[in-house]
Length: 460
Image 1 (cartoon, helix red, strand yellow):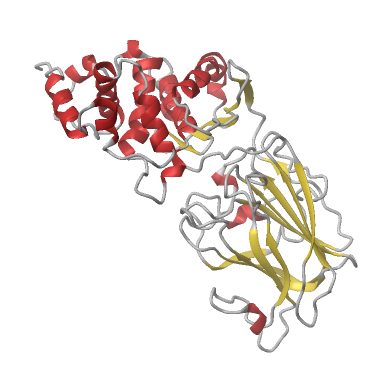
Image 2 (cartoon, one colour):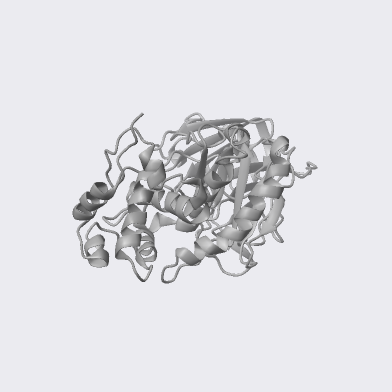
């Protein structure tokens, strides 16, 4: 999960940087301009005040892109999305972005333009609400004619020693959370021509190494030839249904463009449930200094499994939903909405990381004991119909939800247990000792007591 960081109010930043260029064919007046949209101003159009919008017919469109160091993340759209002229429809859309594999330390991408061209601009675009939004890379270029030229220098090879020229160093990482959204970078020269080059090499670095999610979501790379006309790129997909939570706090988009048959259900059943319950879920899960996402999306399309959440993007399997429209469909997505609110990223990298049974047990508790208790999807009625009562608190999903309900009903007269457990998970402070503090009993003792009180399975 790559959760949303709180950003400053809507703002566009324009930054002009003088970047030194090196090498015999480099021009001395390279400049790098950075534009970004904070949350609320980002849109599929990538329209900046100081950086050109992405193009769909630039010199990179028919160029050959090659990964010469590192590896692509299997959850991404592949290197071809960098020059297909199609843009993400929203933030945090892995399939419409290229990014290097999670946990890796960056990589290198080579672009072969087939022959040397007079380059006017090199523009790069990224979009993600968190640390995968900023861009960090060094851009090299070459005509490819030097006797020592190495077209595909590996990670430990210095491009400057094998026929490449350093054109620019780019680092759009902000000091705070500004820029953690939609970013555009334009590299140009005050003379109008960067240089006469056939090859470009992007030496890409992660934006952070605190966890495994520091590799940028690159949406498009444009290479604009001098005096060549370009046309705007196109955003993928049709316009989604946009609604707002009942308290007006959050904007929610629901995209059924890839499954039009579910459009009416999404409008009449799903949207009203999310609109009503998002503020209720937020109210159940506060913590100090935390603000829940003000924007998230639900994409309904054919995928494996039932549904998953990545940061502020929920993806639900339209095939499964189609068979559960009168059953579990809405509840399954409410479970995912809880994940949007959880944002437990703060626990990564230390001993307080939220355990999986709480990551999944809390959403099922809220779903089955608050949102749809009448479904008896995780309560004692459900337990009676299981084949065995071999129970353990960390059994995940409905089992863990039932354990949470027992602890809350028996040891939480002030109804603060869920809030405190959630806060500890979000802040990276969770430990099993928390249960002794909150209930007066160890987690093991609570488990034994809950298991003993559970109804026995009904005879078949």
